[in-house]
View 1: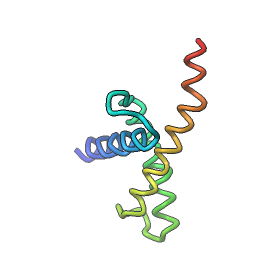
View 2: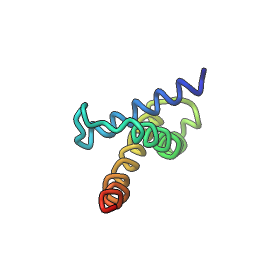
View 3: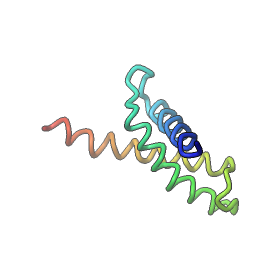
View 4: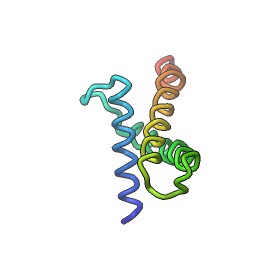
Length: 88
């Protein structure tokens, strides 16, 4: 059950990252939202929590770090991977 909650929260964070970067609700890529949310949560959330001294507990600093990490993953996807796929 915990894994499903983590995946749902990760997808919500990835969705928010796409909306912040200018995607409309109709153009949200849900696969990218899941990947960006999970990777962003892992990297950004962990680094944010550790730098703020919160440890690995769920805190606002970890959530903000997760969102920042997801934004970075979405930016890399949009700038590097998506153009390569369009050329094929």
